[in-house]
Length: 203
Ligand code: URA
Image (tube, rainbow, N blue to C red; front, top):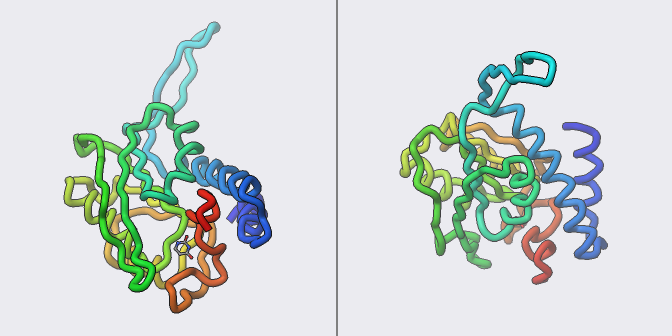
């Protein structure tokens, strides 16, 4: 991982951060992840006209659709919209039961897809992998090929990441940090606590 991302994630983990500081580091990190995401997208050669002639270059090959998993995925969205201003946005809402940590779907609104889109799925924390797999299930059932799915997260528990990668072998994942374990309440340890609560101020 890049040193910049490492320093940002180290700051983001600090329990004493104010809400503003947490949002600041989350956004900086999301910008780094968005830039890293571009390296995984398919490109096509293009030629453009400059004031003095022609220049060869590249352009993204596929339209991008961003899929934040509500609610924490919304924290990553502004940085990705900045980089992909034309992207479609599809929201998937999953609520995690506090006791069982099982995710249930309460909202699903994904734009009509042709099958050629590059999906970038956004969820800062991969704990058990339950919400990730539920969202990937929705996307693949809608006809999205796994090779067209890039999953971006900030911190994953190793076991959750393994669950996702085993169930969806064809997707690409970008994760800023992989942590050791989950506590009995299925929070990532050491992690950073409840990302959504810290970002939205609902602790
Ligand atoms: N979601 C969070 O916000 N934090 C965790 O540790 C696990 C899931």
